[in-house]
Image (cartoon, rainbow, N blue to C red):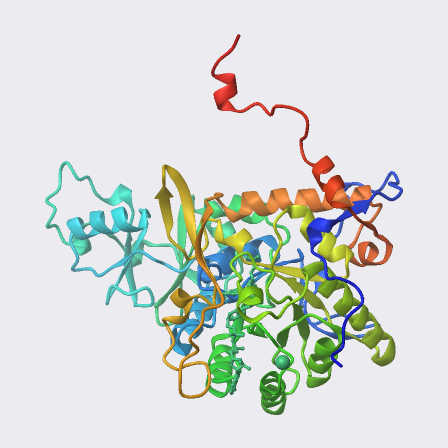
Length: 503
Ligand SMILES: NC(=O)C1=CN([C@@H]2O[C@H](COP(=O)(O)OP(=O)(O)OC[C@H]3O[C@@H](n4cnc5c(N)ncnc54)[C@H](O)[C@@H]3O)[C@@H](O)[C@H]2O)C=CC1
Ligand SMILES: O=c1[nH]c(=O)c2[nH+]cn([C@@H]3O[C@H](COP(=O)(O)O)[C@@H](O)[C@H]3O)c2[nH]1
Ligand SMILES: [K+]
């Protein structure tokens, strides 16, 4: 006889938090949202942590270089999508690691023989008026000068004038050396009244720019997640097939954390992948695994050596796995069950393995609930796909700005593959849809608002940290009629069409 679980599995929308006592020091400013990212022994600190409990999904439509930098600036981590060639994924990781906080890689570069017309065209394309003039016109070439809009007057100059005739030559530039710190760079900018400081290596090759206008933004981001060399922390997704090639390339590119990306992680494939990484790198390479939805799956991956375990099958907004294959579990129940397994494992072994609730977060309060249910952090796809920094197209649909959002199991995402999903024939069914989500602006604004809601809710619950919430939250199941009670009801909500006809 098959095993039947007694309880139905439930989603976050079926629960609410019940407030706890709020003391005088229980204010949002005092809430600490830091959380472990990788496993650690009792009494020790994890070697990697997050300053906010949010990571972005291993998806083509979500986690590219720009997203990774923007999220690290807020204190979270992106997992650069693995459904691309090893070379292009490693290049993305390298680019994030090259974007030192406050040090910006140059995206506007010309050679000395380029013309004023080329400069104007490049400015139009990148929107940036500071250009590096390098010998070969590439971002890492030998720096011979810079061009800013102060160097030319379009009305008085021939468009064919070569850059070398109007650039500010290297000899007249103040530059920083490669090992300069951000504060030293800002001192030079301040002392010499510069708008930008080029950073060069000992061979005069361009490494980056530090811009005066960025100074304020770094003061705004006290939670930035940086490595010892002040570079952004970045993650990357891997699979259970080409890891012997992909993992070394990503490690070489400087990746901080890996995650085996799969709909289902309770498998020999994941154990083999983890074992290979441990044999080759010991504990120096950090890797999460998943996804699982119960204690058995968690235990398996914990014993196989995962640094964190990811939870969730079929709950994602673009997921159709439950319909297609009939596997999965309500996300709230899955999180709770795995959290209990994590605690039990900690008691037995003294090793704490962080768990991540992945997919199905619709409202900001679902994040708080996931944490209350025991998650250490959450992974979001749809949420981040709406932002400017996501690597997906912004389109206009019936006059509304939308971002494209497609599942990793959709036909669209799978098109990149050179190899198929095991065996001879390609898998014939898709497990994800191609969709749109409303454009929501910049990550900074949105994440700020979300975190503010989480902090306020935690204060309502009398909790100042995530471990505090995990331990002391009071959660109630709600009936379907009380869910109706929770929305606006029995009123006619005013909208623009209503307001347009005053009487
Ligand atoms: N979280 C979720 O609910 C879901 C997520 N997804 C996403 O879609 C993408 C693809 O996921 P999956 O289809 O699960 O990919 P997958 O590559 O993990 O698994 C596909 C199939 O290949 C098999 N397999 C894996 N490694 C193998 C190996 N070395 N040799 C032979 N067979 C092997 C697996 O058992 C499975 O049947 C991922 O990005 C995943 O996150 C897709 C569906 C649901
Ligand atoms: O059934 C699925 N088919 C897919 O094509 C697919 N692509 C991603 N994922 C999973 O969904 C998570 C993101 O979920 P949200 O958009 O709800 O944040 C992601 O983090 C994944 O766990 C998929 N699931
Ligand atoms: K399995």
